[in-house]
Image (cartoon, rainbow, N blue to C red; front, top):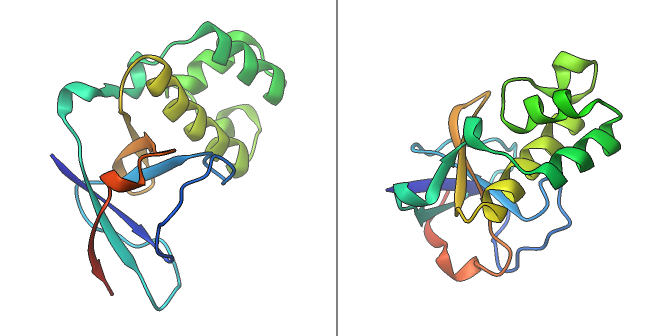
Length: 143
């Protein structure tokens, strides 16, 4: 399956230090979430057997880490990791919710998957840890 990611900048080197660590977000359709006049449209081939649903995510170490960082109990941390709850459901903010999305991508990778299928304000998204995988991106167009 071909999935798309848009960026206001050319992607040459992915680091694990961004808002979403090393994760990029892809969708079935091209959509733009930037006010930039220039948009780079990338595609990535994803094999459906390498995608885990967010509801199937589980990792005890990550749950404990989420619990510690966000000061929530482990049951709440598990519910945020597997998408049953958002950070907003527990009085947290958007940056916390973005951080959870990065942890979802990390969890998918730890579980042996390439991506996690989740929902965000745009609909279905695929959160993909991309550190060291820049060569897998195909530049489709620059708008």
